[in-house]
Length: 262
Picture 1 (spheres, one colour):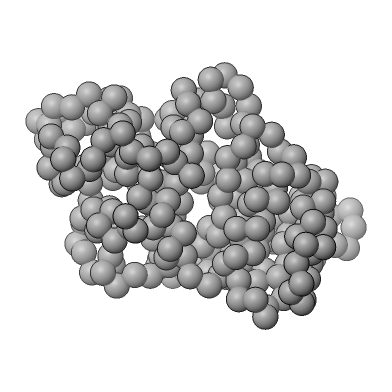
Picture 2 (cartoon, rainbow, N blue to C red):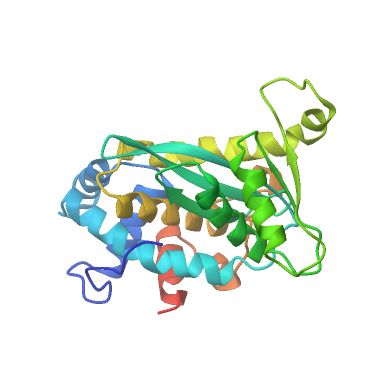
């Protein structure tokens, strides 16, 4: 999870509305920190530095991460998962994402310096936590051997029945019946990966692990609670009345921060 904030959002020099605008442009509209600061200065005559944008975003991410975990609710028992690479200090890291097949809500996100069994297991454990205990859980992934290894560990270390089922989709063409049957789920997680990469692309690589984790947590908040989905008839995956009733997206961001566990 993101580190504890180094600044208090209740004591920042700028107003809460400006904080909401920063999160709107930096996260919702996928602008870089420098472009966000420039837009605020040129359009609204709000003079802040790009470093202030990053500081506010990292502080907000700490609370948004808690909000994400507390409000994602019960998810679909069938989920698709994958890992996609990002860069931190010029080195490859990996973000593991899992998404529900019907609600389209992100159920798990985990950033690690490798794509091995341990981070895959951590991501699947959180995804599993989103499903009611009596449901049959099915994970659909690619051929990365970390997933079956992690599922074997989760099944062997749990007394719950039924166990987690796993299906693999291999390659770009359907060369086996399993890949053909579960290809739509693989396409679902690939679309999520593209959306995620679009929103973090303005960072052009992160300078710190916490920066990567922070923007990932903020992206999940936006994706699950603020972003309308065409496949859901332009509704958000997780509906919260107190957020939906607000007129502007910057107001919604501030409301999320106010609702986050302290």
